[in-house]
Length: 401
Image 1 (spheres, rainbow, N blue to C red):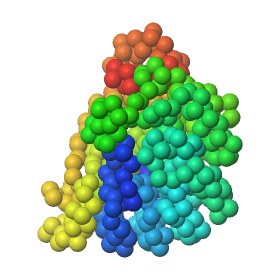
Image 2: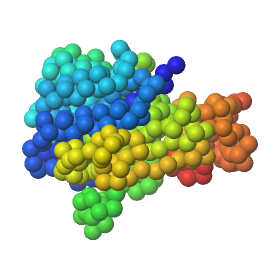
Image 3: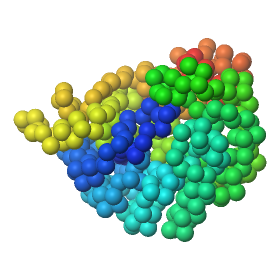
Image 4: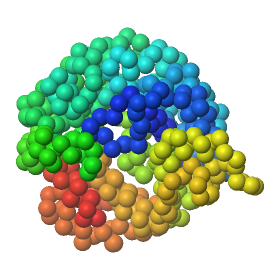
């Protein structure tokens, strides 16, 4: 029996970095389209040649970034063809590509469909110009609506959008309007994120100096509740802490992450996860590729280590992997718990016991009892799921595990 697998392809190139972004991206120079596709395929070929992904079947492929819609469709098609040739891919696999709604960054949607992309994720962030300006986005509010219309006209029947709430100057009413406009546009999926700014990014420096003012903790909570309620009223199911979908439109790739599914990471800065055996009881490894695209490209062109695949398992120091972490069963169990409790379905403790070889009904009983007493989770036999309060204070819930 094959195990489900996801593939994440990172395209780190952007025309311009947003002031709140701390992702592994680079901006300003034209992307090396063909060379980067060659590097990604060399990365994947090395992993497959080393036997890393035997006995797996790809259920989802995700092109993230960066701005992968800037990648020439022919190169995306080449990468897709390489994935299909190197790995077993389910016939109805979900294939998502992130795109910016700005006309010059939306990409050739018809060619993307021909390449095998069947789900589009649009970085709308807000439908209102004042919030787009506050976020430092380049596109205009009308681009949001036209991008969705163009995607539908091109033939995309599965469209997701990103919304950011809690941006400078935003009120709960303003955030509610964005959620209602998303519903009016008849999108299938909404990822609604509270603005988080990491230390050192331009917006954090501006907030620290008083140049911009972000909503306080209580105001941010009110804003988030307004978004949640507006989406629920318009038929969106909240299936994980930041994702909402129409019936039948939950993201397969997203669910894979939250259920501790294995996934291949290829591209500069990409993350991946592999179990050492059939289950967590044998341990696993999380890894991240070199985040610098120039170094990643240089490694792809360099000579392979003698007697080993280019980027095989385990990797040689100085190859594509920048950092890796071996995880024992206990670590994987903890990760599966906190990831699962970020989803509406929660976790099945009996299944996790079989998967990890450690029974969480014993090792985590005091913690689970306390979380239940605080109203953050509900339990029914071996099933544990978060409450709405548990979703709201998910960071605290995770920290307690």
